[in-house]
Figure 1 (cartoon, rainbow, N blue to C red):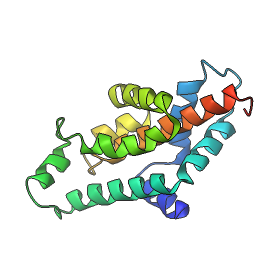
Figure 2 (cartoon, rainbow, N blue to C red; figure 1 turned 30 degrees about the vertical axis):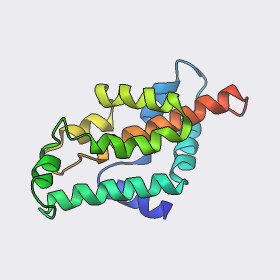
Figure 3 (cartoon, rainbow, N blue to C red; figure 1 turned 120 degrees about the horizontal axis):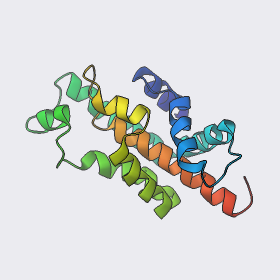
Length: 157
């Protein structure tokens, strides 16, 4: 199923390297010798988790359903415009950030506000609905950065 998640991310315009760039940005101040390959390995480990796979596939399916007009109102319009008070997109993403504790949660909050890299591109897209995807990418990046931080603390990185 991890391959299906990677495929759907790619199909929606997200490469793992895009996420790795964000992970690197989040962790480089704490780990000056951080390699991009370490970031990609952390992302791969996060994507290995079944709850992450389900969250990503669910969020992408909801974005696609909204694009195609296949959700009932008032949810359809709410998802299509990424209504700020909706919050369900963030809740789904939080299922991913919680895997590695509070560092993942705080990093997610930062990325949700700052819209770094591909997150900003997704958030501002006029070509497709990314109400869930931008938050899911931020969550994957946050969880991956937290995984690196935990590994560094235990001497595994």
